[in-house]
Length: 73
Image (cartoon, rainbow, N blue to C red; front, side):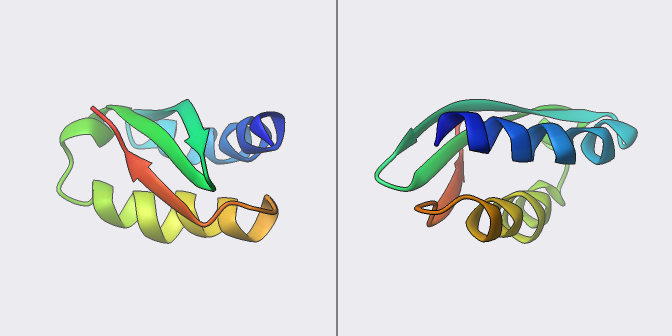
């Protein structure tokens, strides 16, 4: 599962980096993926939208067993 999560994040990374940010996979536990938003994404008011509408949607659709994504600091 961790490899699949990393593959999805690697596909999303160029779009996030284009806006000056990045995403780092931290851990997965009971279907909940923990990520750290870096760079401009760490302090952007739209980071919740990026996290839920972008990253979470892609992971839930593409990785069986993923139910949610949480941001960790």
